[in-house]
Length: 299
Image 1: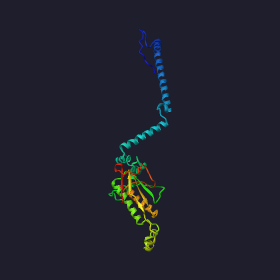
Image 2: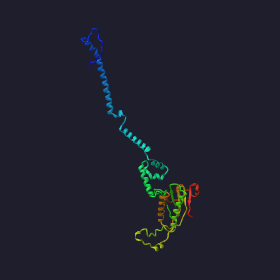
Image 3: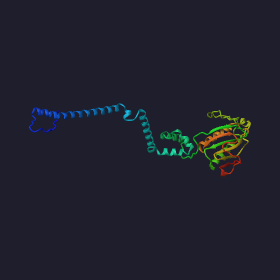
Image 4: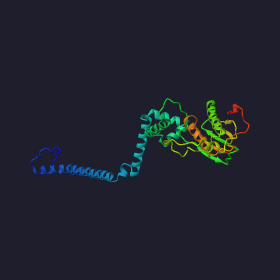
């Protein structure tokens, strides 16, 4: 492709003159060479830039500054931010109420367990809790779904304390309730109810009109409690002293059966300890109600 540079010829020269044409070509030559050189240099620069970009595409670490580990960490952070957003904006309000209540309610925290943070699992745990409480939802129940612990510490059936630990300090109603249950247990024992020597119907079927031998029952050696003390409370601990006399250990099973229902329905008990002279911060002789003590008297 020829380029006309518009060079003005001297007077008397003609473009048809060979010399003039040759001169004109010589005048145009530097321009053509210059254009060619410029085009070549820009082409080289373009090729150099293309190589750099190609190298950048082939080596992602140089251009993007990321690695496979970095991308995984970024994905984890994004997922964490998404879960946090869902927790703050889409988390059920009732689940938030339960989580806040767990901070001060040990029993509720035990019911929910590791379901905290998972609304569906929390709902299932609460439904199980309600199901265990019974179908009558209008009935007031303040017990515990957790079974209390039972332990023995050198228990002497004729001279020992029986201790029980509550989840909190008992109210006057709680003191009367557990005191009445233990007093009833003592009255039954005093009347000889806990005598395993005369269990005629325990191993018989009631479908075939069983027979009861009254003479055998009358001739059995009687067994009864000898004595029991008042029920004392200090903070969340309670105790009473007992002398089972000639009663069998069957009486202990009856007491535990009674306390089990009492704990699950009305008054939550954390543990029951048979034996031992001192447990926790118990102080002998402290009877002032101002110091968190109370007593359920039998006599």
